Amino acid sequence: MRQSQQVHSEASGEPADGAGDCWEGLYRGEMKAQRVILLVGGVVLLLVGVLWTLQGVGVVGGSVMSGVTLWAIVGPIVALVGAYLLWRASRRTLGNAKSSLPPTPSS
Image (cartoon, rainbow, N blue to C red; front, side):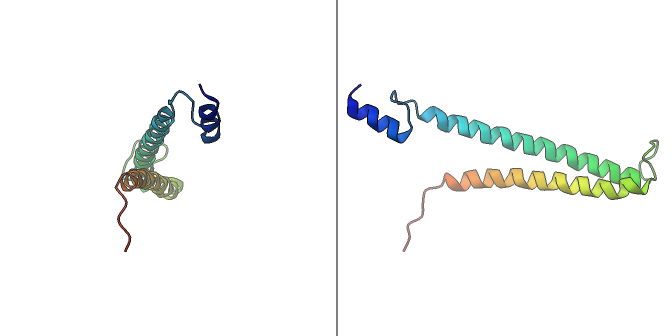
């Protein structure tokens, strides 16, 4: 490797062998993993929150939690947190789609 190539690769932070594209793929993989975690966590919290709410108001019986006011209060809060996580996961998708579009010409 020539000296000028080595200096350029060190300054840019990219490997000298041209393998800099692998980092972009790794970043995309991390973004997908975060999105999956947000989706799964959001769905689980939303479902648990709805179940706890229904148990708290006495719609779903057969549990120690049935008819207890605490769960009628905690359930909607947990469901809202789950809905927020789902919203964040959908925003990640829209953000990635917008960034892949070509730039619009400015007038």
